[in-house]
Amino acid sequence: MFNITFLIGMLLTGFAAQFIDGTLGMGYGVSSTSLLMAIGLAPAIASASVHTAEIVTTLVSGIAHHQLGNVKREIVLPLVIPGVIGGVLGAYFLSLIPGKTIKPWVAGLLLVMGCLIVYRFFTRKEWGVAGKQLSRPRMTILGLVAGFLDAVGGGGWGPVATPSLILAENSEPHEVVGSVNLVEFFVTVAETITFALTIGLEAFRWDIVVTLLVGGVIAAPIAAWVCKKLPHRVMGILIGVLLILLNVRTLVLALVK
Image (cartoon, rainbow, N blue to C red; front, side, top):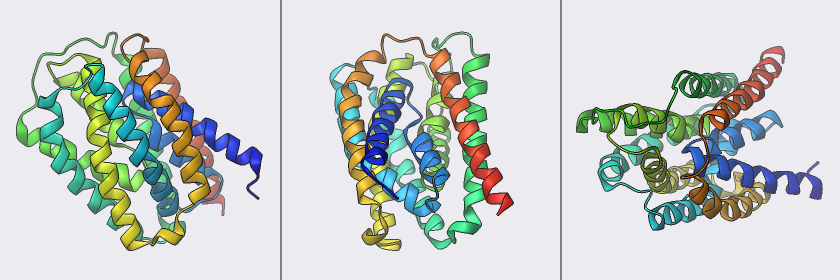
């Protein structure tokens, strides 16, 4: 079923997904997981495979953003521990639910995320600094929710954390994107370990992991540089539209069956 053409497609998917994620602070997990679910993988296996690849891509992305001055410590520190806890809980929850049962719900969740992204980018005229700093309790809740949804949906850390912080933080957009990318590394490591302990490493699709990883590593430093240069609104809307289309398809196929 999976040949060289498929692997090249996964390589390009990993590159495109990481380029979008590194530029916009969202999109890697939800787009990759949506595609893998659309071709028939169970949600837990799709999410586990994507997050395994993300360990390396988020590390490279985080380092690149840090070197370019896109990371703000005041954002990173309050999100790390809540994000890790939320990710572990979400990964454990997903591993307990049969794939056929959870698949329509995960697709629905990703569909909502796609709509959220379109709404955020379509209605916000500028990515300017919006004046109110999130309190520590709200940052904790944001980290928990974003981490949980990231594991359950195979993505969601960026779509939840990035728009929320941009709308509420006294930070430049590139600082939010870079900080969210760096924290995602720690969240991804925790989720992958949880998946490994619950569903087993043998359940991972290692061909997909490697090809997504290679594509993502190539894209990560390029995306970090483009983060400061490229208009965000059009790309954000396109990401949301892509997620909506992919997950409408997955939902229709799941409900028909």
